[in-house]
Image (tube, rainbow, N blue to C red; front, top):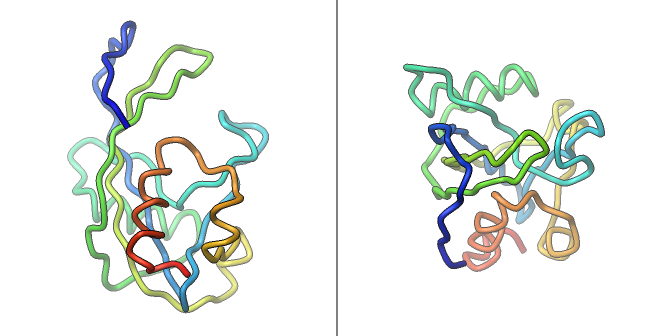
Length: 142
């Protein structure tokens, strides 16, 4: 994907973290609610990094808040930048993705486990598509 300068982005990039949760050749994703931007698209669990918060601590916090999940070991997987052209104006996010091998439990009812075939058909938020490509290329998702 080619880099391009966005005019009108007058905010500092917003750091966000994402969890690439893996189990038996599948990856866990969550569907964005209708009440938020990009409704119905799939994304990795995670969220914004608070000021002064280390990214891995932010991801641990987000996983506890969103899923009630505690992950002991997170490994840096990928980074990416993306500008979303939202109704309120363009917003620049810097995504830091960590991966972890996990066991499914009740928390997984808040999303879906996807294999390579399902992942290829699902509408993924644009900022996460490079992570999906890397997952498929590395055969971590089959």
